[in-house]
Image 1: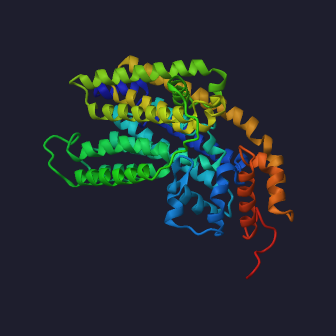
Image 2: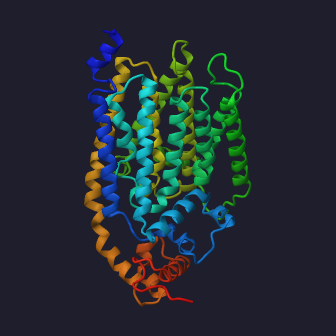
Length: 460
């Protein structure tokens, strides 16, 4: 028997052994639990920013390229808008459909990361359950509030980009084409995606000049795809930045506030748990990220590592996440961050994902296996805690949402309904948000969507 294969069998790490079954069982269970949770507890009515897209979903406003590119706060989100319109029109504005789409995207990303880790390591391990435990945990807002698709799409596309970049065979045209597509879509998810897209563009440019090409490889279709992806993504990014208008009246954070809020963002993956132990999660995240980057740098410097290119890509991914966190800290650092952990936790999913991939790419020493085991166990404990908390808290507002739905499809004027429920339907209650809500209710009532109308739409 081959000694290396025998070692894998003894450790229970063959892809066909118990570790393979454990990892994919966790993935199936996490996906099923997330789907059930969104179906039972997810908001089926629009909430907050959702209302900005309702008029186009219902046809009260036309769908146009100008509207898709229109700025939303500090973001441009054409991909998010298209997702909302597609799901909204298919479902009759039942936002649980969008939440189900969120789960499907997260599940596909977790599966891709499992495969990527196996290829980096050379064999499967039960510790790859870290990916579904992280990506599909119930503490993230994307499983309750549909508009979190903005952050979710950034995380999904960056995860798929990285999985493709580090695990697909070098020099393959499909690898470069996939990376180019994911990079191009990233800036269409908002400013957070734009930051990650900048790092992805740098990698595509390096791939185009043959940085990570297999030995002896000349210019090929793969490098052509990489060059095209870098050029097109750069063009979209330049157009994005050149036409972006920031609010000068907004109060931005100073240096210390930015750094603290940035670390809060990076450590916010466990969401609710962070509010109980904020300093502990900050310290643990900082130590884990710095320690992992040091180990990756040592391996890159070594001449006998077989994953130098993958480790450089992964460190670049961590760096891009840090830049996203700095941007969030600069924009949100003046606010009490304790209410924003769940809001940004979907963006922070990339942190434990990147750490797990780095350790899968490092030589599989006993210490490396211990680190991977610890990371997996912690994420499974966090996932279990969030499942318990979600079941206890998500259903608490079901009765009030039923009342709001009844009023939306009732005979009271949209303005009265908006005034009565504005505080429940938007995170701020202002005359502007009330007008937005009443406009959306009026548009929904012209449809035949059962959630919002008890009678057929009037014929012209």
